[in-house]
Length: 252
Image (cartoon, rainbow, N blue to C red):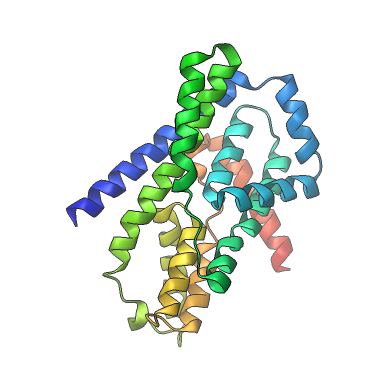
């Protein structure tokens, strides 16, 4: 259990360090060329959503896509409306891991790309200068985020072995709400809705939970699209209002 605890602490530390490196580097290298390049892929809501889907398909983590979007907005590269499109696309793309696990029984590990990204980023920082060195720091930041998430997934897989969700029933509304909240907590702890959904599918396949329980859990696991604690309070309020508007439209 102590090993699981140390992995959790290390994963969170690497995750936060990667976020800091990436955001600060993006602030320094964001220029007119980068703005124009990103504008081609997020110039319209559809393009922004497509970019979010594509990036999440590649990295298999909507959390990483969300954090990258936060970094771009913090650097002034993306607008709020463009960020909303990317976030919506990220939450669509995050279902890809679930489909892969369900149909192929395979799970793409983001840890496989983390160490090469850190190595390439470190080399760029040491050997290059100016914007290239800053790009290396941003790349290393991405790698640290991926590596931190991978450590969190490994640690939480050990914790999950001691949990039995079969004691929860979905017969009452209170029980369903509890499972939704549990799914939300899983995503917050794992820092990846893909990992949380994959864990739910694995539990379903091993008959640890029933189909109705899995469905309710997944609802909670896709309700955590943004890590708003990295935003300033005024940015939090504006982003929350945008998301509430989108949710009200979708639910109407």
